Amino acid sequence: MLDSIFGLPVHPLIVHATTVIVPAAALAVALAAVYPRFRRWAGWGPAALALVSIVLVPLTTQSGESLQHALPRNPLIEEHAHLADGLLPFVIALAVGAIGLFLWQRRVDGLGPVTASFPRWLVTVLIVLSLAGAVGTVVQTVRIGHSGAKAAWSSVG
Image 1 (spheres, rainbow, N blue to C red):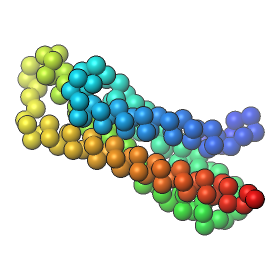
Image 2: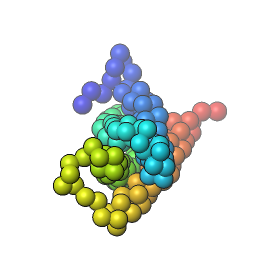
Image 3: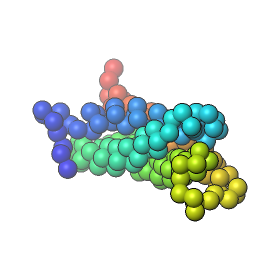
Image 4: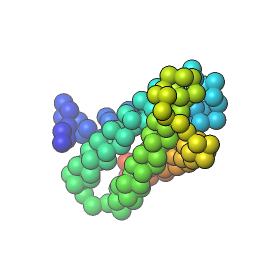
C-alpha cells in the first residue's frame, strides 16, 4: 500500500474523500429508500456512491493502520482504529440496499428483466436495510471522526 504522497501520509489525505463520500452515499441511499420520486430521478447514483464507499473505507483503514504503526503507541489512536474497523459492515449493508433498490426501481419502471420480480417483503427488507445502513454509516462515521480528531489534536495546546 502507498504510505505517503509527496512526503505526506496518505491517511489524512484519503480520509477527506471518505468523510465526504460515505455520508453523501448514506444520505442518497436513505432518500432513495423513502422517496420513490428521488429514487427514480437519482437512478444509479446512490448505488454508485455506496460502491465507491466500499472501496474507500478499506483504503482509509489500511492507510490509517500504516500511519498508526509509524507513530508512538497511543490509546486515543487505538480507539480510533478500533472504531474504524466497525464501519465497513454498515457500508456493505448500505451498498446492498442501494443496489437492491436500484434494481427494484428499474423493474417498476419496466426497464428490468421481465422475469425479475420483487415480492413485497423483499422490498420492505431492502428499505429497512438501506435505512439501517445509512443511519449506522453516519453514526459510525461521526464516532470515528470525533475519535480521530481527539487523537490528532490531544497534544495541541
